[in-house]
Structure formats: C-alpha cells, structure tokens
Image 1: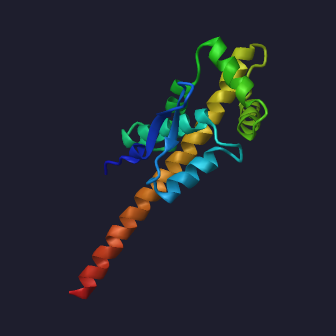
Image 2: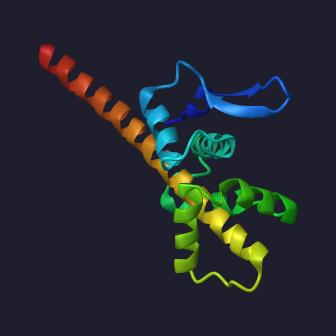
Length: 160
C-alpha cells in the first residue's frame, strides 16, 4: 500500500526569513498526537518537526518499513559538521529529548573521549526515538485503515 502521510506536513517561512516545518490543519489527529509524543514533553521544536517529517517521508517512500530500517535512516540524519552538532546540543541540552537520548547513548557504551562522537551518538538516539514513534503511528494508521476496509467488506458481505 502506498502512503502519503508526508502530505500533511508543510514548510513555512517566518517573518525573519527562517523556514520551519509544521503540520497542516487537515492532518489526522493521530499524526498530531505522534508529533506531540516525539517532542517528549518538550515545547514545539523546529528540529523535531523536521525529523518527524523526514521519518514520515521515509515511511511513505518505503525506506523505513520496520524497526530494522530505523538505524540506517537515523544514521543518515545525524549532523556530520562539528558546528552543526554542537549547535544542536546547545539547543537541546536542557530538554527531555536530549536527556533520554543521552541515557540511551550511555547504555550503548559511547566512547566519551571524543565529544563530537558523543554528541552525534546522542543525536542518533534522539532521531531513532522520533523515527520509531512516527513509524509506529504510521503502521497503526495503516492497520486501522486495513481493519476498517475488511470490517466494511464483512458488513457489506453480510448485508447481501
């Protein structure tokens, strides 16, 4: 089944010229809930919205169809430039998103001698978490639509 959940995201521009990703008004409620879950109790954040859109686009394109694909997707999303990863850490260091990802990275045994690699591991864990939340939400929506279709088929078959 081909999906197009990415259609519910849009990029807008602020008065200062900065662009940001947001959900369209007509986005399904479950998608809004998944984006809120991805924020892990933090205030709305442009980076998290962008990661949610990237995850949904990867699902739509068939690049992330199971938990096994999450690693490859998250790894490709991690910042490679030192300035970018330090800016990300500065923006997130006091957030729940960062705290949980930091614990997960520590559990992975991240080498603490190279700070850039540590921050990249933390960012990787944050992205992985977001992708898993979005993947689960998309799969649940797919299953609900499949169940609805089969329920409707059974009802119409019984009505004949």
